[in-house]
Length: 531
Image (cartoon, rainbow, N blue to C red):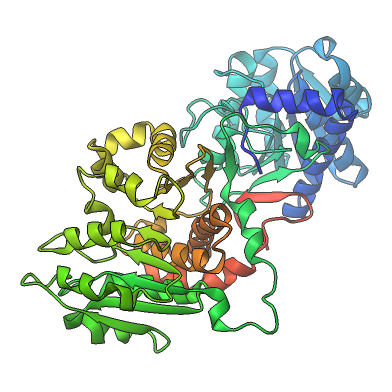
């Protein structure tokens, strides 16, 4: 699923009509029908539906939705903000197809102030179909007044395409001056705002659904090479062969920990096992070996000698060929520390091995001021290396602050992945998965409950396990891992209070994440959880 700009969405609609012969009116019909069906599905007891419509194509989608809802037996009132004479083309046709008794035209601001509050009090659900992807903020006049009136109510709002007033090209979390929304139904493909914005704030799990309306894949192009992580999950949705054995699903070696730091490698190892790796071995300093081994009996362990600081010693490299034998994926970093010989151990191991690699935490910090070595280690992109930094660790690699990283996440992630030949997972509220070819997958799962110590360690284990199982599908494996991690966190937060969720609770919900399917009868839920 490609993520588009507003201009790319318009181009896709034109290509659908001009190259593939699907009339725009047919797309509008499918779009409005999808909104109507979503409203029926999510608000089955709502009898009275209020539609706020503008004079453009977004209003046309709203007119179609209103007609379908009327035909289903709902009571529907359409308030057109503007002049009906300005309606054109397919939007005008959709307007004419409505029963005139269901429509009121609010020609000016005074009419909006007088009519809208009472109409909302009588309604169960409001459909916001004022303006959509093609609109450039800010809202003015009657639309701005309607926004403020709706903001002071509790009525559920379903946004048609986008909450009116939200810039489709915005990559920020919030948009000042836009309508509030409890749910969003968009069409064909998510736009930048759908992927990056929290369109349904303050509802953490408000649905954002992408409904197919008839545009073929060949009509949809993203020059920015942006996709959605959830689309990759299909590689883990096929049942395993009946004759499976553990050797078919890879062997992960997790190297981490230091004296007094057994938790991080324990959590990473547990997550790797739970995410499907055939075998997992935790290689940790001898002083914490027994503690790590207790995380689960399925985990194998390997002792590493320590230096005087309790960190992994360089001497371990002398026998690396023995403990790297038959390893599918190497994961380095959780709990490792940067004391003593640990950082030099990491750099040498990374450079002297050819095994697919996941590098996190202090494994990344080992390359402070030496990020150029990562290009050497990736053999100019021919070896799979996945880095999973949070903004602070990314700043360390780049020699800048975390704030500077956050200010330019897309460009920094893309350029670093391209320059160093690595896959970069830049963690955050919308984690980015950047690849050496310049493409980026944007993740839309996860929630504030995951802002706790250990979450990154869990992700490291899941990424390593997914790579071990799908070594020839690196792009999909990493995107799936990021998506599944956030999705498991969403299931945990839905069942628990966000304050109480622990990193290990996401591991407990991984099974539900693997079983979940993003699509329902309307489309793909890129945000929110359907049943």
